[in-house]
Image (tube, rainbow, N blue to C red; front, side, top):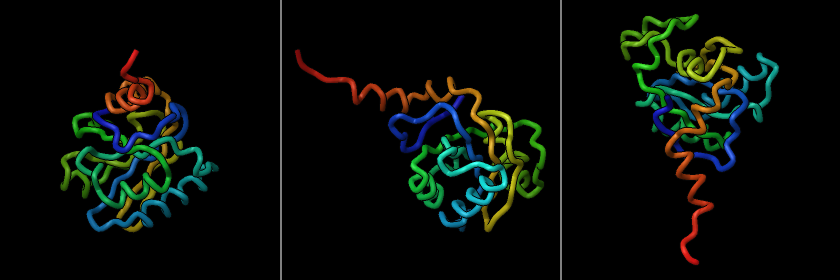
Length: 157
């Protein structure tokens, strides 16, 4: 289950591509966006196909990730470490040493569907793409449900 949405987008699509993102502290939004664009091109996809970015819960507040999500007008999906204990195609010993899990980009993307592009590396950033195949997980986020009810709730007679 998804732990939270960050900056939910009204009318968020429940189909599309989830970009799993791993990033270092010094990563810049331009690094993330350049790598996403390269990954999309390699997979014969376009920017409009991106439905969300996904990352490890403790990385969701990274300023560069928030800026990239804003530029793409998509939410950030936060995944807790215990949900990432899966066999990713390209595990990283470096990631395992720093976080105790073997994958961030691929594992967070795989939480939402089958990979369409395995992990690619950029300047302090990794990205993997998955086709969203479990929209019910997104629809049941408490933040997205709250956002959807706020616009339809009105006090009065």
